[in-house]
Image (cartoon, rainbow, N blue to C red; front, side, top):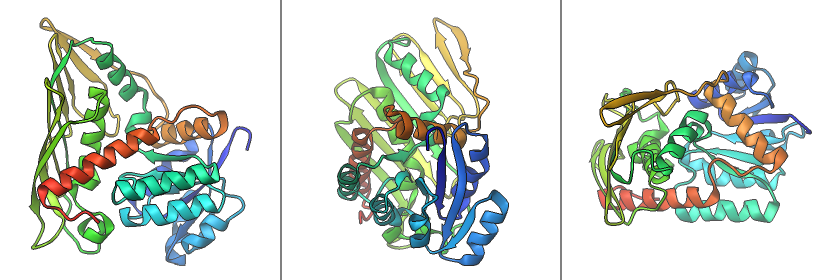
Amino acid sequence: MKDQLNWGILGTGMIADKFASHLPQSNTGKLVAVGSRSQQSATVFAAKHGGCGHQGYEALIADPDVHVVYNCLPNGLHHEWSIKAMRAGKHVLCEKPFALNRGEAEQMFAVAEETGKVLVEAFMYRAHARTQELIKRVHSGEIGELRLMRSNFTFYREPSMDDARYHPSQGGGAIMDVGTYCVNFMRQLAGAEPTEMHALAHLYQDGGVDDYVAGTLRFGEDLLATFTCGMTVESDEGTYIAGTKGTIKVNAFWFCEEGFMITKDGVEEWVEVEEKRPLYAVEADSFAATVLQGEAAWVSKEDTLGNMRVMDALRASAGVPVE
C-alpha cells in the first residue's frame, strides 16, 4: 500500500457509479470490491467498473484486499457502517451529510481515534483546486471584508418513496441532501461559525421531509448569508459573494465544472484553475494523501462537526424532524 489504495465501495447508487467511473483516472486508487444488499446489483456494478461484487455490506468490509471504504449508502447508514468499517481495519471516506446529527458524528470520530483510522467527510468539491483557490482569494482579502453571500443548490427529480431522500428516518430532505453544500461553502468562505441560523421549509406531504428550503445565516455583526436548496424545483447552482472591495460570482461550482468571476472597480477577472483529473479522482487522490502521507484532510473533523451543528439547528428552526 505504498502508493496505491485499494478501494471498496459500500452501495451501488448514483454517487457510487460516479466515483467508480472517475477512480481509474486517479493517480493512487484502484477499485477492488463493491458491496450491495443484492448480489445481482453488486455483480452488475463490478462487471461495469471492475473488482469483486459482494452480497452484503459485511462481506465488503471483511474483504482483506480492501484498504479503504467509500461509504455512499443512504444517510441513515453512514454512522453504523463507517464505524463497522473502521473496526474492521479500513479507513473511511464517508459521503455527506456525514451523519444524521452531530451526536452521531462525534461517535464516528471517537471510533476513528480509537482505531487509528482516517475518517473524512466526502465533500468532493472542497478537494478541487478551483475551490481551494477561491477560498484562498477570499481569505486573502481580495474583495475586502465579506458582507453578503447567497448560495443555491437545487434540482428537480420526480419524488419517489423508493428514494431514501424522502424518508425522515434516513436523514432525507433538501437541507441534508444539498443544503449541506451551501452551508459548508459559506462557512469556509466566512472562516467562522454562524452565530444565528434560521430556515423555512416546504414539507413534501404531511409530516414528510423538506423538499425545498430557504435559510439565513449570520456570522457575527457584519456578514449575512442566505441559501436556497431543493429536490423538486429547478434553479441555478450559483454562489454570489459580496465584499467591501468587490464581488465573486460562481455559476456551477458544486461539480467544479468551471472557474469563477471576480469583479473589482468595474473590472472583471475570470479565474480558472486547470485540472485534468475528473472530480472524484481528485477526491480519491486527496484521501490517499491523507492516508499514505499524513497530509491534513481537505475537510477536517472540526469542519464536519461544525457543519453538523448548523444542519441540526436549521432543521430544528424549519420544523424538520432531526433523528
